[in-house]
Length: 385
Image (cartoon, rainbow, N blue to C red; front, side, top):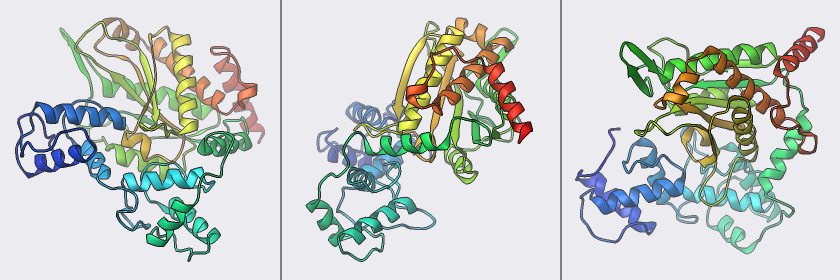
């Protein structure tokens, strides 16, 4: 959809204003004009939802606004195929189920099969028909019961235990590498005289280098796109690919930009919402990769951040988006166009992925993993098998 922005008018703007008013980000009234107050409300909404803050309502912001209109108990929730129900009511239900010890998966606001199974398990325990549908009787039972899980965030406990049981080796694991943009979307483009650099080309080269190194380490690697100009899936398609191949890890590679050429550095993003809900393993992976890149490359540390971008929300495995420098920064750009620097970025990501599979009590200092030895050892182990 074409973004709705400052100055627009019509029924869509009226709907946007109505939702912003319902979540107390805009005063009532104002008609159907996308005015400065509406733009401020949209920015505040995007900030609170972990979206890119630009004050415009594009496709992703529109879907987030639509989800915000639903409150738990306002409608019957069920597992719909092929398009599952989504909304804030689903997210709140998932959080309640997780707090009571039922495995609803990530609280991503999507009423999928895992959520339906958790509802059915809850219904079975309280003596209701276990049909996986959250209607009035199930809602009444939910309101009567409180939290059961103690000792930490339920999803963190569950995901940490799953990682611990899976072992430390990378051999045989499936990783999806996502070079951002592509096709008709080159991403950030910077020209300097006859020279021209695009984000899509640089991150595809990074992804190809990472593909080779991880494959040599025994992992099964998939890329979400190739170098051809005709290719460039949207974020939902990239996430669907990762889910379809049963990926253990998802890594999206991007470059950043800013009008100020002094803006520079690396940042990593993981799934998370404004109320503290997060992908525990994704958060840990983002932190590990961030620290390794800063340590091994010298890029400025712009830290890790929680976002609810669809690319991170729809993936069902530990997923991160790494912005490995500003193409608009002369300092970062000089590094990014150097193949040797790109190899150091790749080594950093591999070290971060390996450390994610180490139990926390067996983790190693940042920058201490020799990736070449890791590669040789794992490759030898693969041949022996």
